[in-house]
Image (tube, rainbow, N blue to C red; front, side):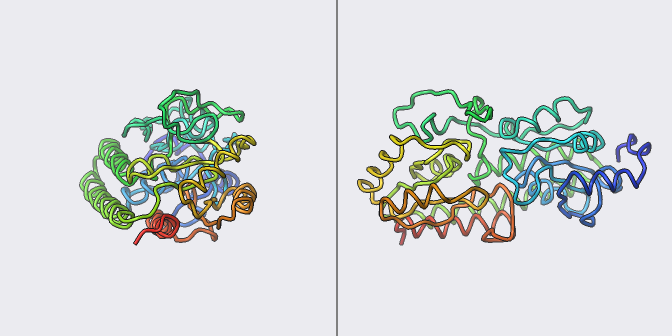
Length: 324
């Protein structure tokens, strides 16, 4: 749809796609590159944004993800080839505050439609410099040692089905405005996705209603919104950045919490090392299990898409929290 792409050869585009991108296949082959599809071309920053674009856009969009399957999205650094490809897209869908290099590249690009998911719902503060929920409500800076700035709030909004539905509605409206010829289909697809997300929310509400403890321990403080939505308490080993190492004092504190609150499980995730989780679990006699932040789908994921992995998360939480 973007007339600028007429000046770029098909060979060049194919080369860029092969070297720089992981591609979802809403309506094209794996090797197709954004900018040469005849569709509404959307570049998404990572899986949760790409999933929205694919579900809402349906057959009318070609979705290209900046983050490869299995790549930790927090660590993504945009290449020059990806920046060039980004400039040929019709729209960019991203979550400001999660991937600094993406924020910068999209901010400097000439793309007409820039959709920041963080502006489509309400972000809140979760976690502290110690990497755990602060029950006293104290405010702390959220820029970690790796330079990931979370001052705008916790970016992990997609793990709350209600907030994710709010984002979906905003993305749908943006697609309708940017590509009015297919607005009716975008509206219909958005409504169907929102309905599915409301059903998922209901499953979590009923599935976690009768439990023996509210506390769960994770390696990465990604589940603040989910915990808040369903009345749980997340205690994270590291902070909002999964690479942050916990202090010795924090580990001792978690051991105490585990004993006092009947914690049974230390959760780790598929894209980050489980070493810290297993060490803590071994020291406290707890089991380990996966609680997936759904930042990407790989062969190790417990499902093939967002909904399947989230339902696997619900099953894991029910077991860990003693839900009946």
